[in-house]
Image (cartoon, rainbow over all chains, first blue to last red; front, side):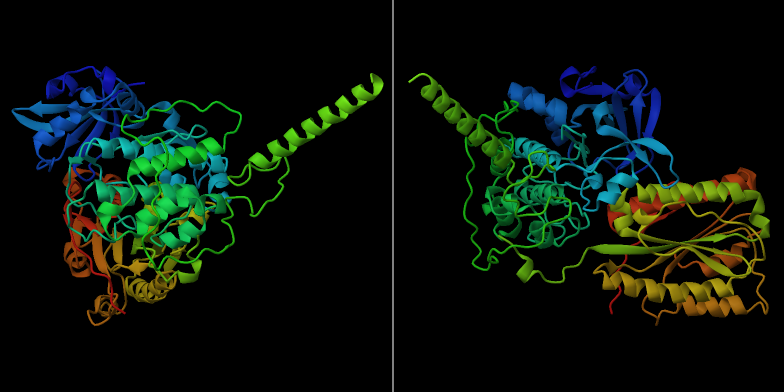
Length: 381
Length: 231
C-alpha cells in the first residue's frame, strides 16, 4: 500500500520526475486535465490540473501537503489509511501543474456485474452503499451490507471528519463519489483532498448535500462540514438517499434513532446556528460507543483517537422546541423489523438487541450450574 | 425520536431530463455495432453510478422513417439488459420532433410527481443524413413546435453530424451547440465514437457542476446555466 508516510518524492517535485504515464485513471473532469498512475512510481497518482487551477492559494496546498508531518503518530496513521492525501506538489516552469497522491488500496475495489452481465472491477464509493433495496446489491453480485458494516463505515467516516476538523481543515465536498468504502471491514478512503482549505474554502455545490443554513456561494467552514458529514453518516446508516433527511432519519433503526447517535445527528442537521452544531469528534464518540455496545465480549480494535477527543460522548439536547415528538415508524427494509424482543440466536444480524441471545445463554448457563450444584449437594450432604 | 409526522414534501433535488437521439437510418448500418457498443457504455456508466442517474434522467430515442423510444425515462437501476438498435429506413425528422415534445410533457410531469425539480431538458441528436421529410418543410414546422419559447419546457438541442449531414441543417436544429465532423480528421466511425464520448463526458461533468455542461469541441466544455422550469 502506498501512503503519505512513504512518499517517494520531496513535497515539491519537478514534473519531469512524474511525467511518464502508466495506467490512465481519468480524463478531463472538473479541475483536472487527467489523472494517471506514475510509470516511475507505481501506486502513485498524478493529477494534472487544467490551466487556471488549482483555485486555492499555493501556500494552502503546501500547508496541506506538509500537515501530516506535524500530526501525532495516530493521526498520521489515519491519514495514511483513510485519505488520498496530497503527498507532493508538481511544478513545471515555475508553476504548479498537479499533485501526487497515493492510489486507493486494493480492498476498496470490487467486481461489479453490469447490465450486460459482465463483471468489471471498480472502486466502491458510498454511492453504492446508500441504497435501501436489497435487489440493488444482489443484481450487482454483491451481498447486502449488514447493519454492522454500515455502522463501521459511518464510524470511520466520522473518524476521518474528526481528524480534519481538529486540524482546521475544511473538506467541503462530502458526497457520494468522494468516500470509498471496503466491504466487510467498513474502512473508508476519502478522495479529492487537494482542494481542502484551512479555516474556510470556496463554495462547492452538490445536489442534495448542500447545507440549508449556508447559502450558495458562502465560504465553507468546519461547521458546514459537520452538516455534510452528518448527512453522509445518516445516509450510510439508513441507506436512504435524497434531500429529505427527516425521511432518512425515520429510517434509522430505533436503537440508533432514539439514542445518542440519533440525537447528535438530529441536532447537527437542524441546528440553525452552525457554530452550535455538535463537533465531528462528538459524532465519532457516539458512533464509537454504539459500535462498542454492538460488540460484546470481543476486544475492540484500537483506533486512532485524537489526544483532544472527548473520552465520552457529549450529546447536548437539541435546542429546537419544534423538534417532532418521538413515535414509532415502519423500519427500513434493510434492517430487521423492530421491535424484536427475543430474536433467534442465529437470526439475521441487527443493530437492535444483539445482546439478548447472549443474555439468555448466560442465564441458561447459570441455571444449569445452580441445578448441578443442587444435585451435588443432594448426593453429598 | 421520529420526524415522520412532520415530514413535508421535500424536493429530491434537481434532475436533468436528457434525451439521446440516434439516427438509425439505413446509412448508419455500417456503424450499427459501434452504436450498440457505445449505447451500452452510456447505460453502464449510469447504472454503475447512482449519483449520475439520480441527476441525469435518461431516455434513448432512435429515429429513421419513424421514431422509437428505446429507453423510456425510467429507473436505470431496474434495467436487466442493454437495448440494441437496428439501422433501416430513411431520415425523417418531423415525427422525431413531434415525439420528443410529447415525451417531454409526459416525462417532466413524472419527474415532478416524484418530487424532482426538473431543469430544462437537453437533447443530444446524432445524425449522418439530411432530412428526407416530405414535404420538406414538415421538419422545420415540427422543430418550431419543439423549440417554441412559449412552451415552458422547450429543450436545449445539441447536434452532432457526420457523413452526409448538412451543416446548415445542424445549425438550424441546435439551440446550444452544433458539431459537424471534419472528414479530413478521421472516419465516420471515429466521428461517431468521439461524439458519443463527448456526450458521455458532458453528462458526467454536468453531474458534478449540477448544470448542463456543453462541450465546446471534442475536448473542453462551455457552461450553460440552466433555470428550473416554472410551473
